[in-house]
Image 1 (cartoon, rainbow, N blue to C red):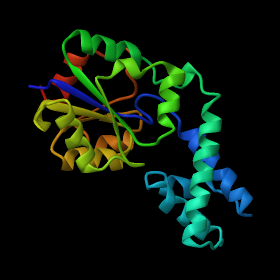
Image 2 (image 1 turned 180 degrees about the vertical axis):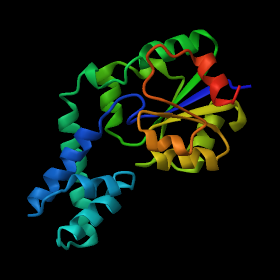
Image 3 (image 1 turned 90 degrees about the horizontal axis):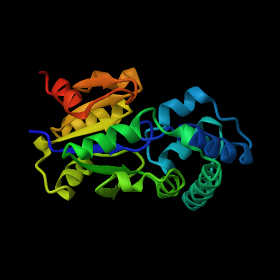
Length: 214
């Protein structure tokens, strides 16, 4: 029986991918190369340092390991500055109502925050109170992150369903043996038990039963 809901942040709670792209783009411009959106799609699920290193390689820019770390720190700062302008329009449609209703129905909730700056977003959007646990993760949640989230809720992983937006995260959820609901991007649905475009008019209990194949 499902008792816990685990949420990936970007693309599930709010869409902040454009802010992140802009931060990478600014670094690339400073280093004299152009960031192509297609190239970014190939690396966006990777940890920031690896992603930036590959993007600079594509742009024929070389830098030391220490410089790359410094560039990543500057990228994070640009990201935070951009997020200062975020509004509630970035929230996924219906997400507040869905989580509130789910908690009223007895489900407990956890959020995987994969960037320090996501805390800034939560403060700006006033959504921290929607979650029973807020847990740090890396840039793209790994298998153990979902298992640890279940542990933090004092639940078995079979008692949890994870909501993710990327195919990489969906694959990790399946590898962790949790139920998985893909949100937004259709390519994530390949690894998921169920797929929704957003949370409008969604009921947690009904959605979970669909994810369980009922």
